[in-house]
Image 1 (tube, rainbow, N blue to C red):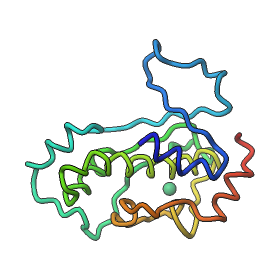
Image 2 (cartoon, protein in one colour; image 1 turned 180 degrees about the vertical axis):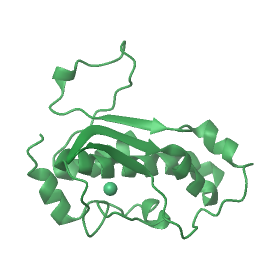
Image 3 (tube, protein in one colour; image 1 turned 90 degrees about the horizontal axis):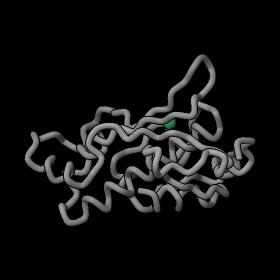
Image 4 (cartoon, rainbow, N blue to C red; image 1 turned 120 degrees about the vertical axis):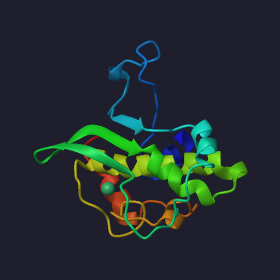
Length: 163
Ligand SMILES: [Zn+2]
């Protein structure tokens, strides 16, 4: 997850550092140019992916659109907080062979977090028309190695004032 977010944000000129929420491991906020809180909701670890194996028959590629993450807003401002729906992402991975699932889950989380960083850094709930910044991404795209920000969105990120 961390590596994938870092890979996707690097072309936009951002180095990403994840830190836990535990006060004992927290790096002082002043050490960062910009800091956001990303809350991973639900089951966000490999044990949970294993547990999902015996759960129901949810079709991972069901046509309905599901929300994988969201930024919080107050009025017209985007707050520095994003929430990622781990359970929903995990449900899509039932089609992924068990051996590869943990790794693919990390990629998917990393991509969803990079999408949220796009909103947080640009202070916008708007979306791009191509690539990772689109409002709707299919499961197969989310799980594909080729998903990344398109040139226009990278340009916007490179020139955001929040850096
Ligand atoms: Zn979005």
